[in-house]
Image (cartoon, rainbow, N blue to C red; front, top):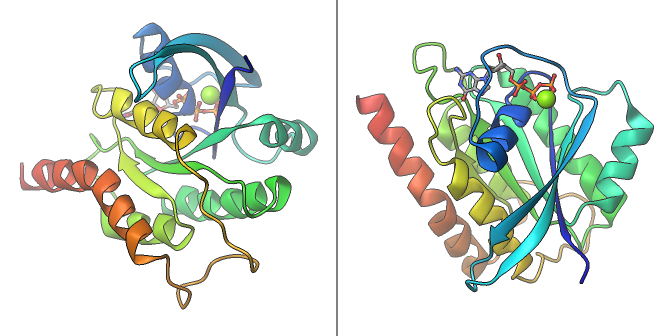
Length: 208
Ligand SMILES: Nc1nc2c(ncn2[C@@H]2O[C@H](COP(=O)(O)OP(=O)(O)OP(=O)(O)O)[C@@H](O)[C@H]2O)c(=O)[nH]1
Ligand SMILES: [Mg+2]
């Protein structure tokens, strides 16, 4: 059986490696060591309760290796698009990356979850949950907030990604989605449910 391959993309230093290392090895490094490309085999429990071996591909941040990036995207089954909530530029880059995935994979085949990482940086936060959620929703994707450092939502985000493997991908026939096109009512409800935990959590962190 072909292994499911999760590809983690996003700008430099947003915490892609930290999320992967937390999930696969239960570790966290304070130091930033830029990634070229690292692949991890992991036994994961899917939402149906069965365990399967998956591959988690941690990619280089930024646009320094465009050919490698294209290959990584081509081979990916499902995507985690990571940005850091203290950096609006990384959210803009996430949107560009999402478009690139759509171009490379073909518009009917994208399964992706947007991840706002570093929510522990409460005082330097610059991207609101609502802003990020709206961006993800316009593509028909779910949005989850995490802290790799404080182990918030790390398993949950990988579970969400795996649950996409059990669903039909959203079909969009014409180009990129825009704010005028509406995601179907059913899909919107599904997205709100899958992002709700993260929104509640975000609210409780800002209240705190
Ligand atoms: N405060 C905080 N810091 C984090 C979190 N996640 C990662 N970091 C820190 O952010 C820095 C970058 O983390 P990495 O995981 O290496 O980032 P990356 O996206 O893999 O970076 P590249 O491989 O260069 O693209 C490191 O110093 C981490 O310790 C988090 O949730 N909260
Ligand atoms: Mg890395």
